[in-house]
Image (cartoon, rainbow, N blue to C red):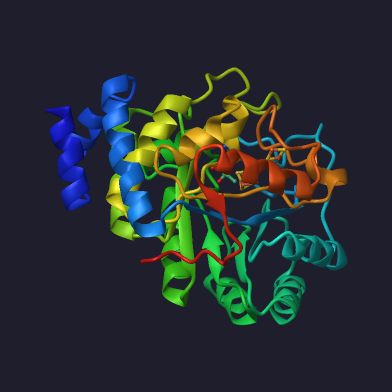
Amino acid sequence: MVKFLIDTLEQKHILSKSEFVSLIKHFDSQEISNYLFEKAVAVRQKHYGTTIYTRGLIEMSNYCRNNCYYCGLRASNKEIERYRLDKETILACCKIGYELGFRTFVLQGGEDPYYTEKKMTDIISTIRKTYPDCAITLSLGEMSYETYLAFYQAGANRYLLRHETANADHYALLHPKELSEKNRKQCLENLKKIGYQIGTGFMVGTPFQTPEFLADDLLYIAQLQPQMIGIGPFIPHHQTPFANQKQGSVQLTLFLLGILRLMLPAVLLPSTTALGTLDPRGREKGILAGANVVMPNLSPIAVRKKYQIYDNKICTGDEAAECRFCLQRRMESIGCQLVVDRGDAKM
Ligand code: 5AD
Ligand code: SF4
Ligand code: FES
């Protein structure tokens, strides 16, 4: 019966909410997981072969004006040492990254008002001119339509904004009242309308999450049809209101990666750092569940430890080149190859 749901998902790329809920509830069955992962890997290989795309992640600022209950960068966290990278440092990261074979740069940060539209468009257009063959991905949170448009016109191609949870009540349990699920979804619509390749996603195992909420996440994603989907287990951070909450399950995260691969066969699906943080082979397991992207860190070593969105984050003491080659070896250990490529979605 459950295998039948996986077959249906493979053929139709969608299930009803109650079907998704029943499927999700079987995540801890080894037999069902293996059945799902085998199909998911076959679909990944059909579209991408054994090629794994890579992106250079530049964590440009750990200042954030928001107070998401789960995140270590929240404004109310007074313990964390804040930093922001200037234009020259960001460009130096791109240079190192380009030489290491990265053709996508991801500029990620908290919502930091220091980077005004003017400062940010200047940074983006300089990267665009210097590296015309590279994709520029932004992951800088919620902004106005006009600002998103200005960044796009300056040369950004992609934008990552996880919806976090598609259910409004659940959203309100994870965020202060200034933030809403409605605005989040509006931002994603705006980005799509402007012409960005968009990425969304959610955390697995956040407090109060239920299989029904996860089914809502899947249905929302099916309707949005993003080019990228980032998911990872929730990991508590000791200086947040969720410090004592349970961490998310690696097994459930892998199961959802498999489901997402069957739902959107050609989607770009990263095997995330959070997976690698909870399991030493988490990123390899993510690929073996259907993921096809890894995002090694390109941030300067001096700031790495300060970008602690959750506790025990890996790769905070390693140089860009170390992470790059570490991941290459990890991918080769499971029969895949990292490639020098922009890695656009084949959809
Ligand atoms: N554990 C796991 N992921 C987290 N994120 C934020 N805080 C945590 C945490 N404690 C994720 C959110 C955000 C992305 C940048 O990191 O989904 O969108
Ligand atoms: Fe800021 Fe993003 Fe962390 Fe929320 S998740 S506090 S918006 S960095
Ligand atoms: Fe960073 Fe392995 S990927 S050290």
